[in-house]
Structures are given as C-alpha cells and as structure tokens.
Figure 1 (cartoon, rainbow, N blue to C red):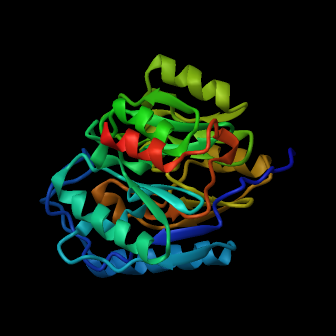
Figure 2 (cartoon, one colour; figure 1 turned 90 degrees about the horizontal axis):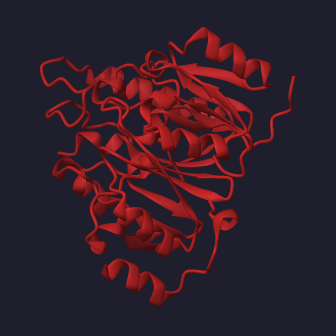
Length: 296
C-alpha cells in the first residue's frame, strides 16, 4: 500500500445551503424541468454532506442563498481562489450570473482581492473548470469555459496554465471528469477530453485512476478530498472505491442524489478557500498586470 501524500489544500470550503433549489430551466444534459424535485430531501442531503466534511476535518464557511437562484448551491463555480485573491467566474448562462455578484460581495466582505474575468471581454470562465495540479493551473476549454480566458487567468495570477479540451456535453465541467486525490494521484475520465487534453493530464498526474464515461456518470469524479478521506456520492463504482482504499484513502459516501438532478454533486457544492498557486507562479501579479489583463 502506497502512502498518501495529501494535497496542500482542501481543508476549508465555501458552501451554500440549497434553500431555493429546484430545476426551473435546463442548461446542461442532466436537467429536466419536468422531473420532480424534493426540496426538503435536498436540504437534508446537503446538511449531511456538510457534516461529513466537517467530520473529516474540513472547515465550512457559508454564503447566504439569493432568492430566485436555484443553482447557487453549486458554490464551486463562483470563482478560483489563490490565497487572498479570487478570480470571479464569468458564467456562460444568464441564469447563473447573479451568483458572481453575490460571491464578489462575500469575498469582498472578508477582505479578498477580486478580479472579474467578465471584465476581460474574452468569453466565459467557470471555476469548476480549474484546478491547481503540480506546477500548473489546469483549466478546461469547452462547454462552460472559453480558451481565450486561459491567458487572462495566466496574467491575473502570474502562473503557468495548462489547457485541457472538454468535449463531452454531459461532463461539461472539468470537475465532473477530474478529481485531484493527492500530490501524485487523481481520478480521471479521459473520455471527456480531446486527445491533447489527455496527454496534458498524463504529464501532470503520475498515477491516474482512469474511469469510463459510465463510471463518471455516477459523479464519482465530482468528489472532495480532505487529507486522506475521499468524500464521494453514494453509488461510487466498487472498483473505484477498492482502488482508493488500496492506495490508503478512506472512502466516505453521502447520498446527494437529489442535487444530481441539476447536474452537480459533492465537488460542485464545495468551493475550496485554501488553494494557493505559488507552485505555478511565474511572475508576481501586479496591479498593472491585472488591469492590463482585465482590460482585454
């Protein structure tokens, strides 16, 4: 059994209680406006998730939900945090754009410095498409994030960016096909990416746990790791759970099936607040650099 080399981040998260959760529109293949949603069950499942994360050793911060924003429970998409600096997402769809305003206010109240990717005028960026992996910021280009925003992120943060093309419509965010586990391992679903993207990931992840598209549809790659505990949605394929345990991880499962109805799972509901891009840094971002990047 190999020893787990824990990630340097993943112990502090921002979450939003799904008080307004429902499926009123369809902006991804999982959403069915005609399917019933049990709002009370969604709340219970979310509370169980938060408690499970805290039991694993994570700290949970909470943002107040905005009325009329049913997808606000998917906090991962608000922005990408680098220390005390956050790049606020530029959502692809109008339905989610008020969430960016709420998140910017929340971060501002805590003294974070915010960069608005929307101000760059180079398209969409959603933070569920970005992870720090080794000495790179790995960012998807696909249904929810435009390739042109990768250079904006590189300039804003002063980091090396590696791009991965997401081509599967149902695995529309990178966090549905990629889950960092520790410093050398990740759950990966290469069927979600183009060939060049898979080559990029293989160069960054020495020990990938490769899953099929069918396995990815269980949302098992949309999991959260707190040190050596992998918090996963119920229904994780047994093969995946066994491999994680062989590597020395503890698997904790939570039923969040009601939240799956809008196309998100555990990672989607948790925005890591303790991420740092120091390992990927090329230059220290200055006010001038940020202004230039965001001016387009």
